[in-house]
Length: 128
Image 1 (spheres, rainbow, N blue to C red):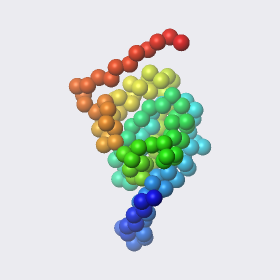
Image 2: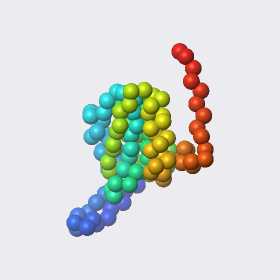
Image 3: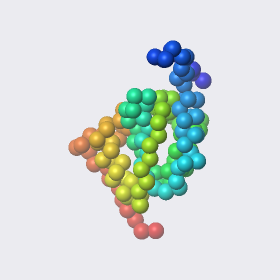
Image 4: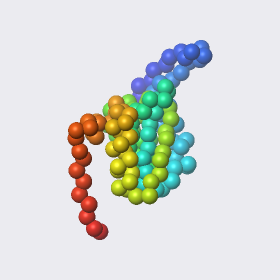
């Protein structure tokens, strides 16, 4: 595991690694609803790193605590995460639209899709 230490403005040694981000995310899991919505991961300065949507917020956010199942890019994002914010929605479609708007508004560096105002996501809705 890659661990880096630095000295913060308060003179204390601060760890910067995947465990710090995972611990923060794990601490929030009991508070998360099993509802659709949007989540934002923020860095130490309050900058939005990533915006995501979920049918089940709790289930989706838990997946970020399992490093063996996520890419190196997402591991870097988790290692920089210092705050998690959620917005619940009534439906998955509402979450999808909100996610798209927030990505266009904040342009998070870890979101690679939906950033360009000229591109449109295509979704097919079917009846179950």
